[in-house]
Image (cartoon, rainbow, N blue to C red; front, side, top):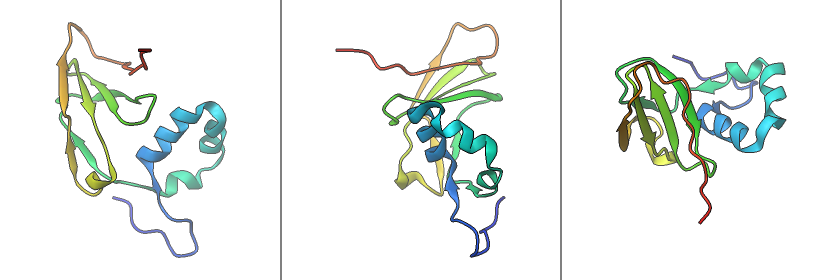
Length: 115
């Protein structure tokens, strides 16, 4: 577990929010993550996502940032809704999809569909 940083350091970064912003804003944030190790030192555990029975291989935010999808060695896709009210606790997937995969899932994405 990470501890609270000394007062001379910047406040902790919410990993979920940082990852969501990176995905929403594209490569602009990529260089900030790669060139600044102090970002890693400021990560904090916000919540625990419970639901998979295997190693999680992919996690992606929806284009609007409202949902998270994960894929795992258990060959399931899980859909998560994460909000500030969930901070500090354990979050369970609100939907689970049994797939026809015969092997681990390494990529899953939510795409915006035009009306």
